[in-house]
Amino acid sequence: MPKSLRESEEQTPESGSGAGRGRGRGGGPRMKMVRAKKWSPEVEEAFRLQSVGYKTMEEYVEANGGEPLRWENGYIRKLVDREGESFTYWRKDRECEDKYLHKVKLYTVVEP
Amino acid sequence: MSARLTLPPTSPAPAAAAASSSMSPLASTAGAAGTRTPGTRKPLTLSSSLKKPKETRDPGPPKAGAFKKRKPKPTKFRRFYERGDLPIAVEHRALGNRIRWMVEIEKLDYHHYLPTFFAGLSETQEPYRFLAYQGAIDLLENGGSKIVPVVPQLVLPIKAALNTRDEEIVCRTLIMIQRLVLSAPDVGVALTPYFRQILPIMGLYKNKNLNLGDGIDYGQRFRRNVGDLVEETLQLLELNGGEAAYININYIIPTYSSCVMN
Image 1 (tube, rainbow over the protein chains, first blue to last red):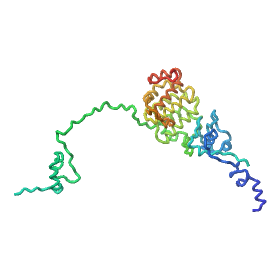
Image 2: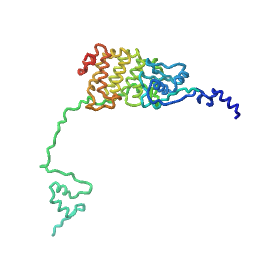
Image 3: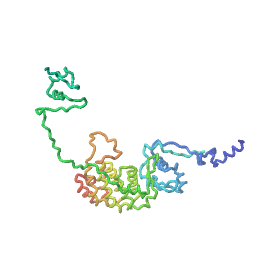
Image 4: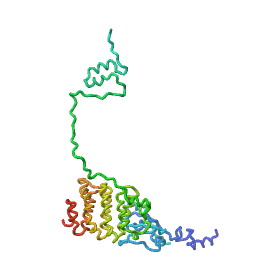
């Protein structure tokens, strides 16, 4: 491949090829993932979202066009699935038990 | 004519026969079975002088069976679920099973669905047990003011579940009563007139506790101790049942001591 063509590809990261600098494989921002080791409200939020099939809150908002319903203490109360056909309701207190902690993934956007 | 001793083919050797003659009368009676075939043995019989008089034990009064499990009848929850009337499904996920609601809970008719889910508390079979328990919790948490008018309809399913006297069902029902009382402000007061239906079984299990001495009950978090659950439930009913709650509880369970007045 000629050098000039390679350079032009690198300059258009939205192409979805995954070769773009600062972009993830699907064309979104590059993300770093760590597994939860200890419970926290952020872990609880990730647990609730991932139980329904979303990676992050940004993904949920993008799919449903708005934030989910929340309890007074800030925990997620109700989530809608991707098709908008079914609903999952969550309790006011902690639901992510210690036995589920290692399955919860915490994503953070990596600065390019 | 000489008398000859003829032995049956299965009888022991002459030396053994001589030895047996010097044995106790008990053994001799056993050996007297001349035509014994191998494998079949006559039972030993004692002479009348050795027989002991038969001890006749007094069986005592028959058991009342107060704690005996009663088989729960098939519930209307199961019927409705099998018929496809309930808008729920189990969602099997790695992060624990959950209920998926096909209709928003806020749009459901509580007069129909809440008693149906409470009826399912008597279920011990999956998926009915899980669906009824979790579904009832979801309805109570999201019901708000819709719960109080339904309370009279919940009494019968609660009573039926407690009457099964199956400890697992009783524990589950007690936890659900606690959740019901705490779900909305006036539910406890609305439940007070029905204490006569609910409390007798609680009185039965009030003292059913573990006698551990100074040991530790490591399963406390599972909340399976009926005695503790009954005590907690009664205290919640007293705290949330208004002024007449203590008198009504004490009328049915005289051993209950107030958690407010003392």
